[in-house]
Length: 138
Image 1 (cartoon, rainbow, N blue to C red):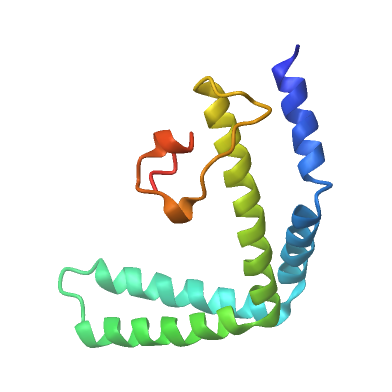
Image 2 (cartoon, rainbow, N blue to C red):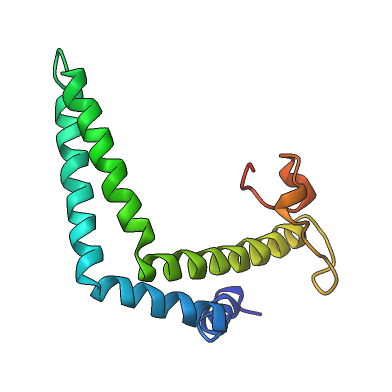
């Protein structure tokens, strides 16, 4: 049994899953959204200015406060963009799928029955990753 081949087959199956397809479509929309790209550029510019000011021997606290305010305003617009909202929902779904799959694999590595093991949801996680086989340190 070639474990690498099976992993590649799993990867191909994931790419056929509706959650992945939604995620890929949302990511593509984001990459083509001019408003979103402009906001991302603005965020990066403000972050750069903030870092430069913070790196000075005596940073100007007023400038830094202004950069923080500006960042928060732009970031809010960024996250309110409909394409970004759609992307965040799709990303959350694909993250949940991947966490679930990794939980199964983690349980299997610890000797659980691959056909019946069921990772526990992180909602009930107490931080002991042995319970679900994950190494998320949640």
